[in-house]
Each structure stands twice: as structure tokens, then as C-alpha cells.
Length: 195
Image (cartoon, rainbow, N blue to C red; front, side, top):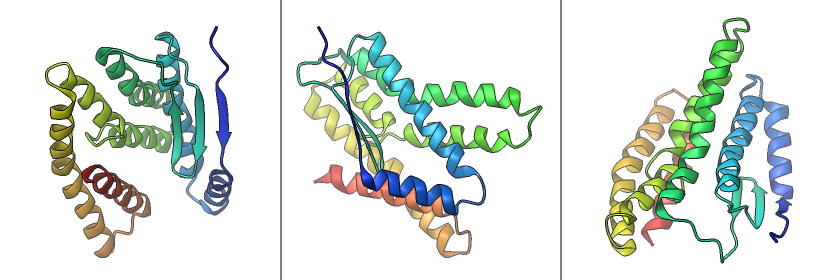
């Protein structure tokens, strides 16, 4: 019998979400939170279908973390399915909202947010979904240690130029805070993975 999934919601997440919703004038905060929730539901649905329900779900200031039991083992093919389930959920939602946006123009922003979230998460940088997908794919063809080396190289090639471009855009007057924060997050992931 499977134990019930435990939920953990941090105070930092509550403060961050409240602050973001209160000060956001564009409406993108609500769209982003809904897109992120739908994204994680995609991962949870995939885990449920694969009979690998999580042990704990932690919601923090930097997103949601799904923790599986130590005894839970999935094949590399199943890991690939779990990895792409989140971005796939965003693409499905974007398609549905795209149809509905013919009647409500404001939904076009929600479509864009879902597409950007799917694209960002498919960057080949672990622990983003694209990096996890790439790692599981490579593990079907080589040893895990070699797969990790290739993932680090791919992450550097993909992440460093995009982070540099975001900082350059910000410095030269295109102050896109979301892009800057995302790029700093990607850079921190690169630094963490290089150690």
C-alpha cells in the first residue's frame, strides 16, 4: 500500500507569490503561477500513470520540487516521459488558450507565458526538464558517468550564451526582469552542476 504524498509549502513561497501578485500590473503573475501549476500537474500525472506517486511535494520560492521515495525506480524511458510531461502540459494548455483567445484577446498573454515556460524548461540544463530528458536519453546509450559529462558540456553550450544575451539586453535598455531572473537562475544551475 502506497503512503500518502506529503505536501510542504514554505513561507518564502507564500511571501513571494503575494508580493508578485500584488505588484504585478500586467497580469503575467497570475498567468505564470497558473502555467507553473499546470506544468507540475503534467509531471504528477505522468508519475501517477507510471505508478510512481511522489513521497513529498515541496513548494518553495523557486518553484515546486517533487521528491520520490528512495525505493522508486523508473526506467530511463519512463524518466524521459516524466521529464517532457510538464512542458507538454504547457503546450496543450497553450493550444487550448490559443483557441479561446479568438474570443478573449487577453488570453494571448497566457498563451505566450505557457510557451515560454515550456521552452525555458526544455533547456538542456539539469535539473530543468530538458536536462533530465537528455540525461535519461544518454543513459540508454552510455554509462551514467559519461552521460553526466555530456550533459555538463551541453548545458554550458546552451546556457552561457542565453544568460549573456539576457544581461546584455538588460544593460542596453531592454529591462526584461523575467528574462534576467531566468538567466541568473540558469547561470546558478550551470555553476552548481560544474562543481
